[in-house]
Image 1 (cartoon, rainbow, N blue to C red):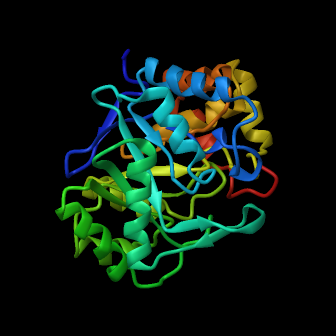
Image 2 (cartoon, one colour):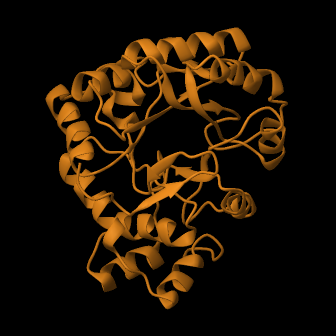
Length: 291
C-alpha cells in the first residue's frame, strides 16, 4: 500500500488507523439495501481505497444486509497486512429496507458471528456498539450490551471495542467494562454538539470518527463553505473533510462514495492546508443562521 492518507492516529489501546478512511455504506443499493447498481464499480472503489493507502475501512453487516461485507470480502480477501475493518452491531433491517435497533446481548453476539462469516475473518479488528438513533444519542444503560461484546473480546473474536452514537455518560459506563478504542458519532461543520466529547476523546487516546462528515442524507449546504472552497480552488466536500482533520488530531474521517473519482477527491483533502483565518471562518458555520 502507498503512503497513508492524512497520516495516522493511534488509540490508547494500540489501534492505528489512517486519518482518512473509507465508509462502505454507499456501496449497497438504494436506501442501503440490496445489491449495488454497478457491482464492478463497487469492487473497484474498495480496491482503489486500499491501493491508495487507506487502512481504515468502515462497514456493518446491516448494510445490505450482508451485501457490503460480502463485497469487501470479494474485493479484498485475503486482506492486506495493516488493513483494519471496523464494523458495527446493534441494528437489523426490516421490511421495506427499514432499520430496527437490535441490542439484545445474545443477538449482538450473533451479529458479531455474522460479520465474521460474511467478511471471511476469524477475528474482527474493531466492533462498535450502535446506540441511539442515526443522529441522536440516548442515555440508556449500556453495561449489559457492551459487556456481551467484551465477553467476545476476551474470547479472542474481537480485538478492539468502540461505541457509535454515544453520550459521554455511556462512554464512561463502557470504560468500566473494557477499553474503548473508538467513538463514532455524528459530527461535521454544521453539527458540533459533541465538541466536549471530542476533546475528552483527544485527552483519553480515543479515536473520534465523525460519521456523515459531509452531511450524510442531508448534504452540507453553506454559503461560507462554498466561498472558502471557491477561494481555495477546490470542492466544498474537500474543505469540509480538511476542516475535520484540522479540528483535532484525534479525528479520523470515513467519507463514503460509490465512485473511484469521488474517492480520490476525498483522499486529496488530506493535502489541503487551511490557515488559522480560514479555520476561524469555517468555525462560524452552524453558529450563524444562513452561514
